Length: 201
View 1 (spheres, helix red, strand yellow):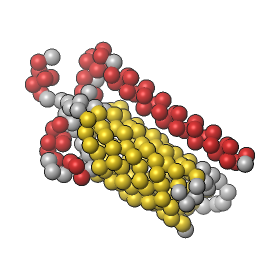
View 2: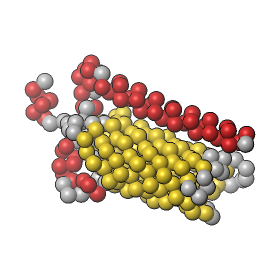
View 3: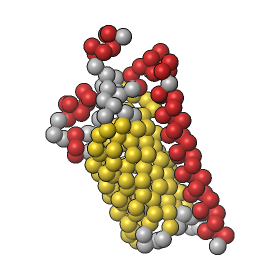
View 4: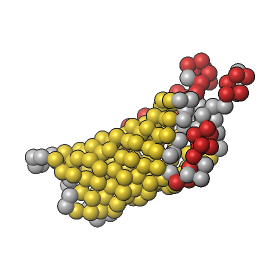
């Protein structure tokens, strides 16, 4: 029971840190002076709500607290959600393999642009996610950095805590959003500020 209580407190702490970090980034990027004088390109061109139907494959290592050596873990994820400006909210449907067992996870992810590159066509995102593992009846949570090519390709690095196995884990993820496949050039241009708007300011 003591372990369960500590795990619950740790999960809550990670979730709070993730939400605070993303909200702080959102407030800073939304400040008019910062947006116009320091980083005018951090505001994406489109401010409409966009549908996201991404998928992701991830694999990495589990650092077990109670035994020597590393364990291998992998995931196949579906990430339906919405994006507004630099903020993205996703549901998380996760098929998890934690050698030698499989599981199924349900959760959520939040991410926000912190560094735009190539006028916003490539975006570096800070992200936090948490999920409940159905078979293990426990949770895991992670913080990560994502490199996003306008939804066409997304690479991520994650550090998290598995509260069932009481272990930390590290993941590398590769993902994509099929919604962008119909017009990949438009997806890249849509993520970048228009030159005429820049010239008019």
